[in-house]
Length: 491
Ligand code: B12
Ligand code: SF4
Image (cartoon, rainbow, N blue to C red; front, side, top):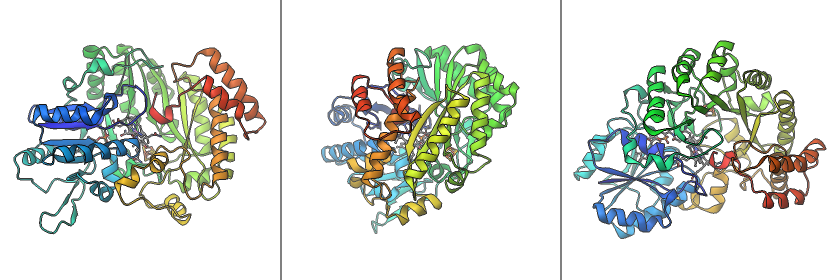
């Protein structure tokens, strides 16, 4: 028996379908025995998983691990469960081990790390582990050499063709439980119809995963997957987690036409320069298919910063403004995300982005604004070089990665980074509070219309007069009207 574990990744009770584990399970569903366990919804994950191990006689615990809170929870679970069941084989997969294989293997109790996306060969490898004679040639595998104890890292596999993968084994989870109400619809579910991204932005973890490769379901295959969620499970809204959904205009148009009759509302990630090239006909097809909002990495109000970020393609500040206008015309909401507080001059960077955001809001007042702070990823480029010059270094072991300090950094919200002095940090926190109040998100279904108006009034005058200092009024207001930001835990 293999237990696939989703360690706690977010605060609160939000029921987010563990798609990563469904994608892993799809590769061996029907061939090997497994269960999916979601630590996000357990009161005492160590006890509950231990009970499952004892009940099922599980031999393998396989964790999906993102940097941030999920690293800390997976670390805690691994150590505690391995102590109780020393014969368990523990595997970590997903973004954390892909980017930080050495730190992963520093975790007491982790036997193997798997880097990158998985393919159908995963089944043979897991079977070999269950049979006690491990095959060690799996692409992306990281292991300790049985004789020398040295770490060995196999080259990562080529990105798998998503069209060759079996469908998600939804029977392995309680789909009804994961249908959640959001601003999109009363029964929202996560899904994706492509993998990877052809770009190599200097701040993005996806690059380590695919190195510029991408694989997309054909429009008819993608539409069939959506129809399954609607017709078999009653979904009426979909949050597409594809890294870069809108690659290929013809495919997008065909997909939108093929799902239009399903009557869903949906959300996805896209790039401004790709979308800027779309024809009005494609935009109309997207609107008709129920596309409600697109998350777009606008990143900065400066073309020079976009260049430093290696944003690539034809992305530009003017292109983002043009897109804000196009989307207004077609009634699709842009959710623009920005990375503020970049080295070497975080305050000047923040000010520049602020004036750009105001321009966007003038053109399209419904635009949603998301603010992140730059968190380095292990990828060569000007951003990482500037961070390292300022004294930044990645931790070597998983215990450090699991600390509160590093969890804050991974969450991309004002962690203590070397170029962020306490003074700058205070400025960034204040700035963010003013922005979040002036532009409350429409994705938080708990915020009532009058609460939004109060927040807008309280934050708006500060924003207009560029007065961010000492926002005690907003702090108090935020306590009375707690609002949730989509950048921390989705919507
Ligand atoms: C949904 C999602 C979430 C959900 C929860 C996901 C979950 N697992 O519980 C929520 C909203 C909670 C979330 C939160 C955060 N997220 Co998030 N999230 C995503 C998103 C959009 C989709 C994940 C997904 O389903 N992918 C599809 C599946 C199929 O791909 P996959 O996860 O990579 O899985 C494949 C492989 O990795 C591998 N694999 C995965 N697990 C395992 C396990 C084993 C055993 C094996 C062998 C293989 C394996 O096989 C899978 C199939 O091939 C991704 C972007 C993306 N498209 O991947 C970002 C992403 C993973 N998140 C990211 C970030 C930064 C965060 C946050 C820090 C955001 C924040 N500001 O707080 C938090 C951190 C939470 C934490 N660490 O605990 C970054 C990570 C980048 C990085 N530097 O590592 C990503 C890549 C977004 C981005 N482009 O920057 N996230
Ligand atoms: S376009 Fe988006 S997903 Fe692709 S590398 Fe850049 S930030 Fe990452």
